[in-house]
Amino acid sequence: MERGKNLVLVSHCILNQNSVVKPLARARGAFPIVNKLLESGVGIIQLPCPEFKYLGPERKPMTKEEYDTKEYRRLCKELFLPVLSELKQYISSDYEILGIIGINESPTCSISGKRGVFMQEIFKILEEENIYLKYFEIPTDYSEKNNYIKSFHFI
Image (cartoon, rainbow, N blue to C red; front, side):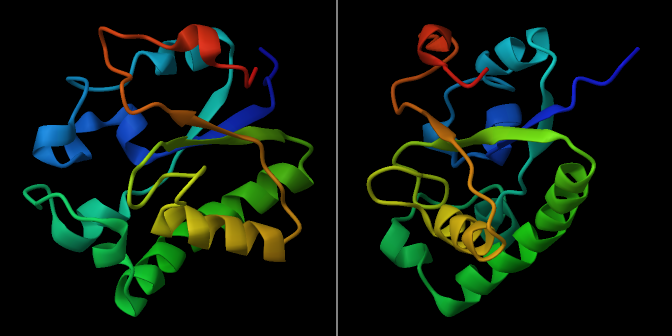
């Protein structure tokens, strides 16, 4: 079988809601939007979760301002650099990176509005590498029961 050569980066919790701060999890495992990606033959690159790496699974909810420290930004950058290396290899082998999926209003992974710390670091690094990606965000009211696949225009 021939490879589709289409990839998308996703925030860690899109594939693993177990990494989310307890009261904010909106699915038992993965978000249903993952099914749309799989059905479309798109490869998924799961970003690491800086919040989980920084404070573990039992952390309390925090604001962007609380996460916005030199130490946390350094962690975000360190976590993204191996992903960047993979992206560059894919791009040099004629794969298409369709975009990145973030989490709206996340202190770490929000893209539009008040951009999260991790996404700030990611987009800064990508810009330095002249890599520009489209993006989509999981809305704050998205859940297993309230599926927004119709508004998903990546593919």
